[in-house]
Amino acid sequence: MRTALVKVGGIVGAAVIASSLVAGCGASDDGTIKIGAIAGLTGSFITEEVVKTAKRVFDDVNEHGGINGKKIDFLVKDDAGNPQRTAQVARELADDDVVAMAASGSFTDCDVNDAYYRQQKISSVMAVGASPKCFQSPNIAPVNVGPFTLITAELLFASQTLKNDKICNFTVVLPGSEEAVNGALAQWEKISGKKLVVNDTTVQQSGDLTPYLLKAKQAGCDAVLFNPGEQMVVPFLKAAQTQGMSDVDFLLMAPAYTESVAKAVADLGLKVYAGSEFEPFTADSDANKGWKDAVTRAGAPATAFSQGGYLAAVFLVDVLKSIKGDITRDSVNQALRTMQPITNPMVGTPFTFGPGDRHAPNQASKMVELKDGKWVPLGDFITVPTSS
Image (cartoon, rainbow, N blue to C red; front, top):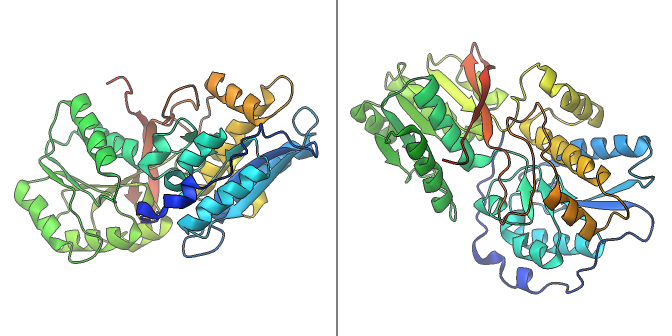
């Protein structure tokens, strides 16, 4: 999976506050069910496969008669990774009377539009949530595990499965995510009863990575969690090889779980693992069959992002089918908040929206291990106990 290091900061400002006051119920005058999504179709970070795969799911529903005889009109807006544009297109979708958002793949959506979605009473079943805001809103429920629960899950893998004793964390902390990262680390400590030997959350996005590895060697770390994506992971692991750290378990996050990373570090002789957002996208498994069929027919890349688009669409369709009577913004909101959990083999915990003031339904990850230049799935989902 890929990642974008996006700082939204104070850009939201007036764009979030100055908004349309027409809340509406989202009923469509043309007899269709309007679903909105925001994605990066242009710009430096493209997430087109998310909405292409979701559209294939919605098109399949339409080809079988729609929902209660009504077709789904999937309205996708391009924000080009620009926060001002993210705010603008959300307002365009609200003006278009969408009944809900589904399968958004924008990395600025949650930070920019959370307050607006609350005001307009729009619920979003999001394909890819990366910001803490995505998991802290009553109106947004991402289908992916996300970077914070994944930290806890990977540390549990190290302490429970690999039986590591001296576990170390080296993390790039983006602005606004400090509390979420620290919460994820504290959750692992509470569950495992262990403490990190090294907890360095000051890793910079540029510069020499060797000092961090020397710090790990000096502390005798037998496992190292490192959260950045490909751009930093590859030089980090090459430097680890130079330091002779072949006896250390390196735990990477979902952004580093890519085929290009596997090829780039295949010959380093290191023990490398990564966490997945869903059923590992490289796995030829029964769990992935429905998604692989949809993504192939959509002509989209088979990535974790496209998995998120597929699942967001599938889950929302199930919720829409449960609605008796008119499908409006209000009835969709009610259905999401009273829905029964939906199980799917691509995720380790059921999807639910519910009435809570925050949503993080995906609490499980499967690990993959690097072997002979390929990612190989390991065991079952690691589920983070939510009651701990």
